[in-house]
Length: 148
Picture 1: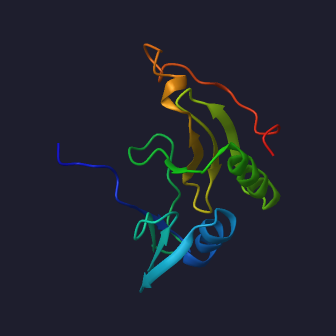
Picture 2 (picture 1 turned 90 degrees about the vertical axis):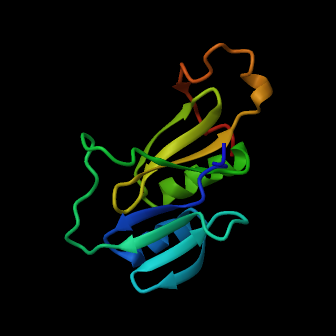
C-alpha cells in the first residue's frame, strides 16, 4: 500500500486569532507559516500537522448529526504531559468533555473555539494490549488526577 499515514488536517474556523490562541498558547503548537486567511501549525518535526482557514464569523458550528469530521486526535508525549495539558485546558476555561482509557490509548477530549472536538492522547504500548482479541471493543473511565 502506498499510503503511509495522515500528513495534515485543515479545519475551517470563524476567527484565526481566537483559534491561534487555543492551538498555540493552550495546546502548545508552533505556528510555522501563513498566507491570507490561512495559518499553519506543527506539533512535532513535520512541516505542518494542522492548517486553519478562516471562513468568517457567520459560519455555523459542526453539528452532531451531520457527516464530516467527528474528532481530531493529537499525540502527547507521555501521561504526565497529558495530565499537565488537561490541567492547562481546565485552567484556561476550555470545555473538557471527558477522559477515557481506550485500551490502545489514554486521552481526553476538548472543544476548540469553533466546537471542533479535539482529542489529546498517549498511546499505550502494544505489549499491554496485543493479547486482546478486540482491543478496540471497550472503553473505560480514566482519571488524569493522579498523573500530575
